[in-house]
Image 1 (tube, rainbow, N blue to C red):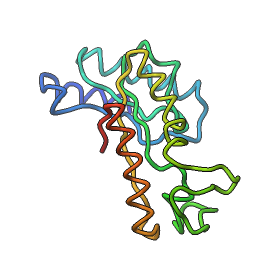
Image 2 (image 1 turned 30 degrees about the vertical axis):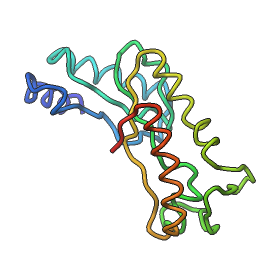
Image 3 (image 1 turned 120 degrees about the vertical axis):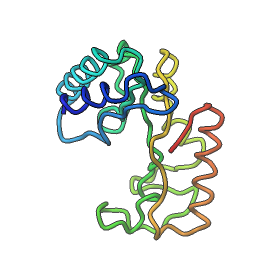
Image 4 (image 1 turned 180 degrees about the vertical axis):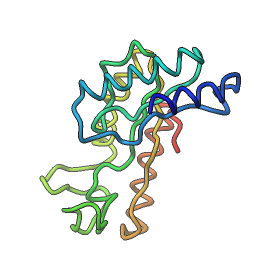
Length: 170
C-alpha cells in the first residue's frame, strides 16, 4: 500500500492539487482507531517525502472525523448516507432498513431525523473544520427503492447544509 501511494506521489508530482488529490482509503472499518491512525500517518509520510504539497484526504475512521490526525493537515470526508433507514431502504447489503421511509422520519430507535438533526449529525465535521482541516462530502445518495419524493426532500436538506457550510461534494 505504501509502495503504491509513494509511486502515485512520484508519478503526479508537479501536477496541481486542483487536478489531482489523493483519498487514501474508502470508508475504513474492521480495525481499531490506533491502527488506522498509525497507517494513515505512515502513508502521509511516504507521500509527503516525495510531494510535500500534495492534497491528501481521508474518510476518517468508522464514518467520523479523525481528530487525532489534525496536525497532518489532511482533508477529511463526510458521508451523506445518514440515516440509513432513508438512504439504504431495501438494500440487500444493509440489514434492518426495511421500514418505508419518509422525510423527515423517525429511525428504528424512534429518533426524529429532519434537517435540524442532519445539522447536528454534521457537527463533528464542523468542529474539525474549525481546527483548519478541509472538509468535503465524499459520497452521498439513496438506494433506488427510496421513494422519489423522499429522495428529493432528503437531498435538498443535505445540499442546503453543505452549501451553507461551503463544503464541496462528490
